Image (cartoon, rainbow, N blue to C red; front, side, top):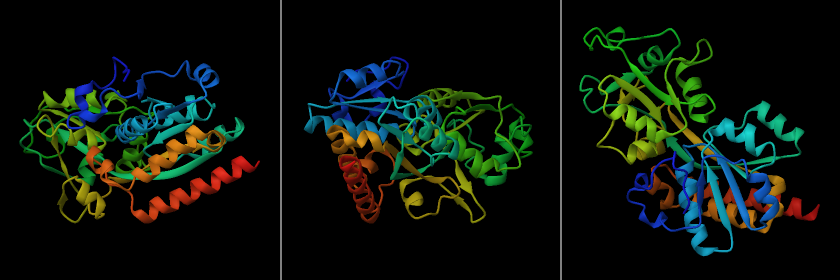
Length: 325
């Protein structure tokens, strides 16, 4: 497996050793995508969300074991960056997304003759993390979390609660091109405010782990899978949405108890790309796996069998449409 040296190191995959030695390519940029797609008929190109990336990587790894004739290339660009820079311009076949596609992105795709087809493939418990050394905080209310991340909001821990340290926050979070940023902003900040701009913004979730783990005054957020792989390096903060403190977990997300930070995760396939058998086969395999323990092992909640079957029916209908045209 070829990897981007600036991306998450192989060790990040921890218990999923079966990822090693596959044909999946995880790259930082897709400047050569258009050329690659034109020159190789048996390649599936994917960009988008870093949150969805671990699921897609595992699925692609297993797919490549069964289909050595097809190469699956994956890049972490953020949901918005994936849509605007690669998927809507027609440079990739699939976009990982930690939020629904925006109207402006649908319009951009349409202008380029691209019709996105949405499939929900998991549920995430977006997780707020601090250093294990931050022993004064185990739970935050939604309003406290808003005060921390609001532009012009709290600057020091003691601004939130008087008995907390009189020390400035160090903030780590998703880049503004990320679906995680969009979802967090909507769920926590709301329409009447804006997400703070002075923070360490990144699409590399491993960077957030590294920034938070050694700093008792740091706080960050990202998809649950990245916490689940590093439970001894960082501490997850429970969230109180008015019904008591609830810790992020696969179970609390599945039961709908972890609010408001449980969210659906998606892949979007370009309808036109589904004319190609290799894209058809990969998406079908992905949707079949989305209801299995493969998603659990990554740290997310699988979809129900009902959602899986609806997705497979939508895929079949779409393939019939593009192959009959």
